[in-house]
Length: 77
Image 1 (tube, rainbow, N blue to C red):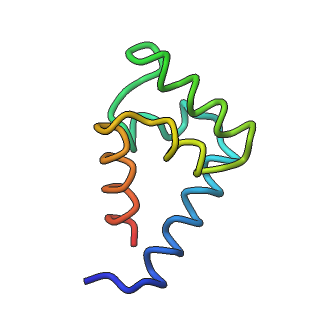
Image 2 (cartoon, one colour):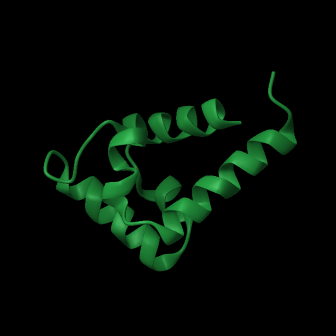
């Protein structure tokens, strides 16, 4: 089982990546989709980058993509 610190560290690293990188640089790795295949997800990621918050994604993602995001965080921890 992952420690609380590892999960927080992985979440902070992903939050930094969302705030500092263009969505097309990580979209396929995390969600398995490209900007062309899911423009609405790309727009959400773009807005999250501009607002500087992973919280925006957690509030607006659908269930499937939210699960992918959480799975990615748990794999990185």
